[in-house]
Image 1 (cartoon, rainbow, N blue to C red):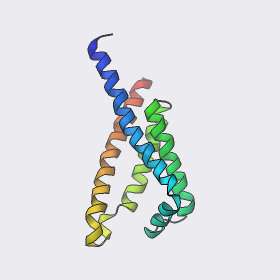
Image 2: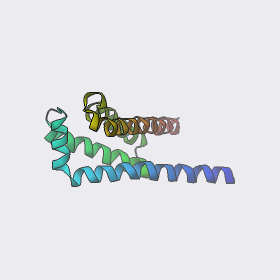
Image 3: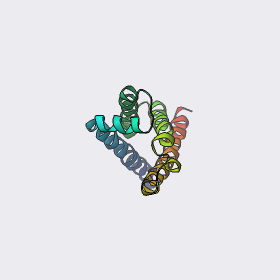
Image 4: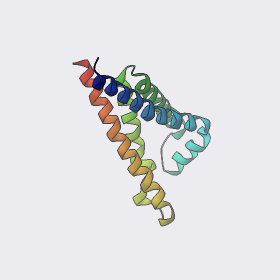
Length: 131
């Protein structure tokens, strides 16, 4: 195996660990503060937040760990993508909040959009691995 191939494999492993690990930590934090997350979702107008927040967080945890360990990668990347695409516009609707909250919500929105981009990259790599 060439040095370049080894470096690519290491970079892919580190990238998966950083991306998936950060998302797994976020899912852990959501579960650790589930009541607060549900209340926040309810304040944003999410119907059935008591059901949807744990389900969405479970999807995030599954997807993030799947990316870290590269198990069921299409399903894992799709779960992360679905989580982020589903929650970002409603939970971080900076265009609907007061000025004092707008900057924080816009920052979270932009961060999540960049994470959606990364999830799309992992999804495309997972599809390529199937060819």
